[in-house]
Image 1 (tube, rainbow over the protein chains, first blue to last red):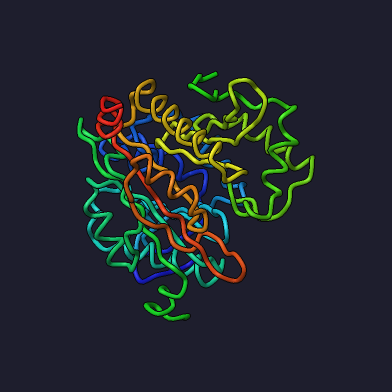
Image 2 (cartoon, rainbow over the protein chains, first blue to last red; image 1 turned 90 degrees about the horizontal axis):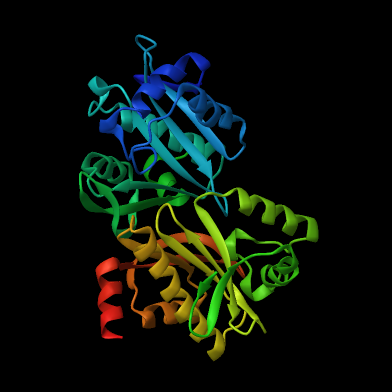
Length: 178
Length: 175
């Protein structure tokens, strides 16, 4: 368990699954996980999103509110080539969006990835329509590396696919090694 | 099988694995497809089995139409509309094959799938031969993914290009 000021990250438990699936199947959240709207059954969700936590390359952690113990979202990272990883975040509970919880959760995740896992680089994808995700990435120190034109469709319109990355030395310069 | 003018794109058979293994084990291509160390026969066979499980990633061989020579391999990512190329020989014959292969892959992704509006390719920055071909084809720079690998003690990047469906169609009309 890794604690921040208001949230902590812990392993995903079986009891978390119904809530996480609810977020996953929410039409408003489409594209955050898979680039489209792909509602998923409870059985398949357990197989794909819970049992894959045995995969050494993938890690999923629940974001929990310290004060109440409420599950509010999840973060993930997947090891890629050459000691790098791709990260992701979802703040599933609407009332906790734009409250700085995502920033705090990702800062904890960066700490795990750079100071424990010792990755040399992290990256993330988001869509051109997702202004809050872009602002979050940039405020945390990620740099826009690639813009694929018209890579995603949402609400009948094409949006760019944006790829951000952060090097380990950039993390250390910004956050230190503590 | 996808037919071009001088090449065709065909599925990989068990009997092709040794040729593909020699490409991966070529020191000049080290790092392609994320492979850093030479592959053994069982490792190559495991890769082949793993490839067949991928539903959004198709690996296809580029072969001369008269079946006299394998010229390389293309990976087509149907989910996000991307391609990757593994070309063992940097010569004029391969260059023509790459141009034709890109054309066929774009036609497949943009005109058959019709679920994509752009296609991207990510190329290691040391592979200037392929970068020049992709530029010549008309793909546009989309950015640079930093430090994707290391060669002789120096990091290298991925240089990224993309092409929109409308740009591809315009190119076709001009042809």
